[in-house]
Amino acid sequence: MESPASDLEKLNLRKITVKSALHYHVNEMPCNWDVNVYRGCGHGCRYCFAQYSHDYLGAGNFFREIYAKVNVAVLLDRELSRRRWRHARINLSGVTDAYQPAEAEMKIMPEVWKVLIRHRNPVVITTKSSLILRDIELIRELAAVTSVYVGASITIMDEALRKIVEPGAAPAEERFMLLERCREAGCTANVMLTPVLPLINDDKINLEAIYKRAAMAQVAGLSAWPLNLKGSTKQKFLTFLDAEFPHLVVSYRELYRGSEISQPYWNTIRALKAELQQKYRIPAIQVPGTGSAEEAVQLTLF
Image 1 (cartoon, rainbow, N blue to C red):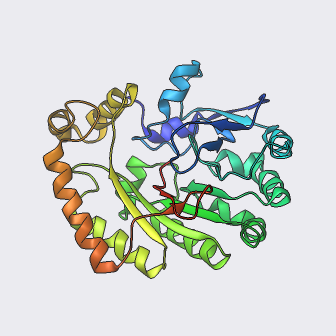
Image 2 (tube, rainbow, N blue to C red; image 1 turned 90 degrees about the horizontal axis):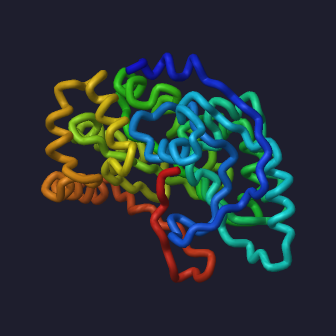
Image 3 (cartoon, rainbow, N blue to C red; image 1 turned 90 degrees about the vertical axis):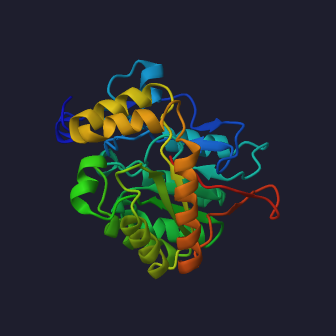
């Protein structure tokens, strides 16, 4: 298996045009509508569930072959202008991170934010990059007229370990700082401690450090969920473990007889999560449904 660094060094960025910007899905997690500015993601997170999308399209390596949808803002403007559009909340990070490394070059997101401002459309976005702060004034402008939920996926505080598991993402401290800046700009800021990786980032020292820093950042919520190994993601992650953490492979095969973690393990983590949630007074993430202020849904990873 090639190293995470070699994957990123060989990144191949391609510009493409697409026929639609908005994509509907039945499950409201956190909303029914997605806009994915890219296919593939240069962050290279070894647990990434979205790798299946490249497999489905036959588009090559998810971490190396990055497709930038250069006409997505124009299409989004057109679709939000339709009379039947009801300002439903849009998730800007359904499958890939809109602020992955390619965005520094492509600069697609500023035009997307301008479209959202024009239509006063509420959004949810989750990122692992402080590059989002480049567009903070546009985000502030949107937050002044509608709801903007910004989440940061923060899983590992130790930098040496983070570089192995999430080689192209920003350090944890940068992600906390971006949340603080977004909160100051009028957004609702949340932490996604997702995924919890058995025997890698699940020790109390790491989890408590994240909860403690999240409390300092005054985030609105924090949710933690275990690694899910659906479909082809399972073998890819096990291959990564064999290269970087070979002593854990047997344990993972025991913990993951199927795609989901064993219940006894998750009960242990759930208890620790409840303890930390109470200690630091951070609730689980809640995003009110756009149809009714009474409804709420769980914010999910991109």
